[in-house]
Figure 1 (tube, rainbow over the protein chains, first blue to last red):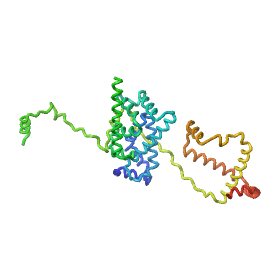
Figure 2: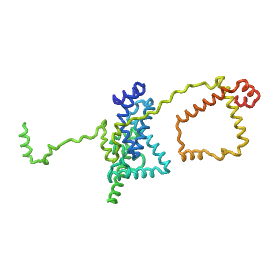
Figure 3: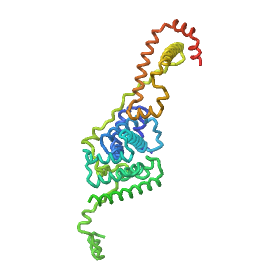
Length: 187
Length: 168
């Protein structure tokens, strides 16, 4: 289940053998993957950075609960996903927006975001993703941008591969339709 | 079979390749499982501040020290509890007399309280609560130490209602 390095890091963290060093190794191994996973969901860098911090803090706190029954990355991705969803729900509540309105709000902010350098098509793609239901957004981001395998996504989201493939298929169709309609309109 | 012969045979078959095809030929391997292609992220248009990942470090919160567990039912604590109960009953009796000036439970329901907390963004964490109660406990303990035990026992004996309440 775990790679040799992961097994060593987890063992050191759980048995508190030089945990700081082990934790730093874990951070180095996964910071980029988890960052992009979170960033695709929250869209802006500042929120992604805060959530990445919180995710790693939770990983450090709860590593003793990790029994090695699932892969380490899927366990960590799950923590990051839950942390991010909770954050987005709170943000929607604070701004008194529905979850769909929040998605529109996040995407509309991209145009003035210093850390977004996408062109018209990339912005349109983000707008299309924002129209998808939450689960389809997650699947689309993980498959399309992070290029995770269906098996890996299924483990992270704890759903069957079949349901996942169908979810991704629907998401792609919707995104394509949206892009086609709006691209013609804008051009 | 040498290269010259091979080349001759291909010419004979009549098949051709585009100009410089073999010179420019390269295999584009798909991203492997262990090394994900993060450059693809750039296609989403998102960027990060310069050296963000190089400088990234997690600021772990300071670990909370384990608190000592003190048995609730020691003789010392029974006196403390009794005196706190006496104080509480005294305060409640005062509050009851002037309850008209206060908001009653009927005025506040659970939903209203939750709504207030949500809308006013009351933020707290377990660490805040831990420190708040730790400080309050220290103050109460100091006050209790000042109470004369004999006077307290005498008071409790005379006030049977309180002792029966404590026995419940």
